[in-house]
Length: 127
Image 1 (cartoon, one colour):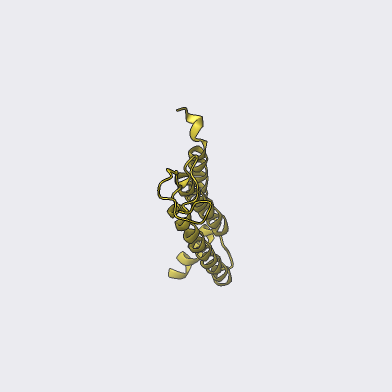
Image 2 (tube, rainbow, N blue to C red):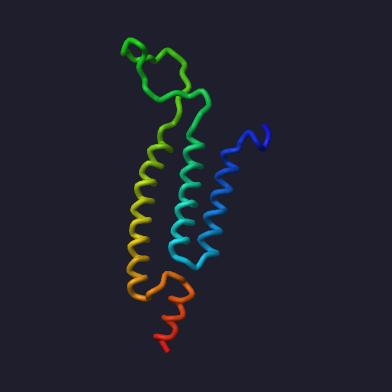
């Protein structure tokens, strides 16, 4: 088992670090949302790759004649990670929509989407 045999995990780690770095290093709120989406995508890829079994088939318990095939030994893939990720994608889209709506309201209120400028405006308003 070599390091390259699990390249999907290396891609997940790379995407996760790129998304995390983008979230913490950028002051622009839109760029932070993009970093969050890249991070979410890496988590989705991780769960989907863990759910795939090499040589596995869909867990449908029927033979060619439409009868139950309890005697045949078949390797099935687990559908649960795929179903959970489908739900997580919907939640991620909703989270992104709410985040972008908040960014629009912040832009209307402060006239900027840069974190430093918003903090400066807030500090001047409090003083």
